[in-house]
Each structure stands twice: as C-alpha cells, then as structure tokens.
Amino acid sequence: AQSVTQPDIHITVSEGASLELRCNYSYGATPYLFWYVQSPGQGLQLLLKYFSGDTLVQGIKGFEAEFKRSQSSFNLRKPSVHWSDAAEYFCAVAIPGGYQKVTFGIGTKLQVIP
Amino acid sequence: DGGITQSPKYLFRKEGQNVTLSCEQNLNHDAMYWYRQDPGQGLRLIYYSQIVNDFQKGDIAEGYSVSREKKESFPLTVTSAQKNPTAFYLCASSNQGSYEQYFGPGTRLTVT
Image (cartoon, rainbow over the protein chains, first blue to last red):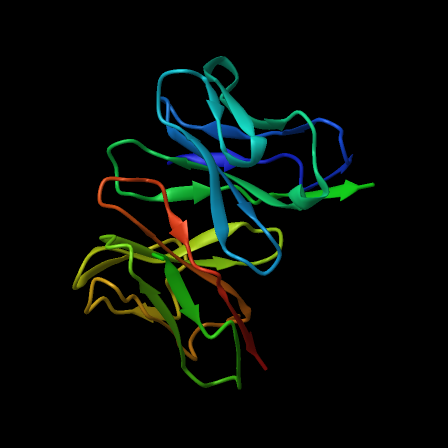
C-alpha cells in the first residue's frame, strides 16, 4: 500500500521569503502525486499534480513542485510567499490503474509573518 | 457554476442520535468520496462510490453508512455506533478514471 509523509507539521515563514514544503512517498513504482491547499474551515483545492513527464510541475497561485524519483519526494515550492498563502497544505498519492483511492499526508500548516 | 455542496456547515447532535450529512455535486462526476478530518491526522477515507448503487468501505467505515441512489448525491449517516463522531467531514468527487478530486466546503459535526 502506498503512504505519504509530510515531516513538517508546522512551518513559519516571513512574507516575501521563499517556501519549500516537504513530501515523501512510499511506493514501489512512480505514483500519481498531488498537492492540495486548505484554508481554515474550508474544503481542499488542488494546487498541482504529477502523473508523468517533466518532473517540474507548475500549479496555481505561483506554486511549483519537483518530483525526484531517487529521493521519493515531491516537494512544493514558492519563490515569494504572500500573507494569503497561510493555510494547510496536503501532499497526496494515488496508485495508477488502481481504484481511484488517494492517500493524503497529515498536512503542513503554514504561518506567514509580516 | 459547477461544484459540490455540503449542508449544513455546522451540525450539533446529542450522543446516541444518528445524523445524516448531505453531499450534492453537479459536476457529472461518477465517483464520490467521504473523508473525516481530525487535527494532526490528515484526511481519512470513510466510504467511496465509483458508480450509482455501489459503494465500498474506506479505511474507517465503522459506525458510518452511505447510500448512492443518484449520481449527484452521496449522503453520509453517522450512526450512534461511531465512538468519536465529532470531526470535520469532507465530501469529494472525481471523474471516472481521474484521480483529481474536487472537494466540498465541509461539515463540522459536534456531538455532545
């Protein structure tokens, strides 16, 4: 079974600073990978996804993520964080060809300080 | 606009009562899902349905039940058998064959 680990439960960055949120997965082959964002008390919104091809994926709101097979990682990055980016971020993994089941990480809560 | 609606946003119940959470989508998606979210535990899958009149248990189905009589609707019943029902519940849907899920705004259930 696949699993996903987000090692940082809480991260604080200054507005304008760069951001990297870590995500590692466990699966024998290359899974489908996702990053979602959740504002407080709201549902989740898809930021970006990786299925195959170019390992650097661009998403909405200026986010990007890089798939590194050798490290089983799919880290989320943003060059300059805005106060509105404060939210919880979830990495997720799915197995190609299987049931449409997606496994979510426990989330990383991002705080942005002025 | 297409999307997923969940109602109500906040729900309060007394212990021992069953309660049904609504989830409706007008995205014409075949698959629908229910997740439970607790602080520090991410999202855990309760039930999912890939087609009308068919559904499967997820990782934490005990104490919950669902039905899928219409493509647009996937209500979740939290029964009195669920030991810790207080949580934030999220409904999602996806196209057949797609792993990209669209989420509703959630229902926060408080049982006292």
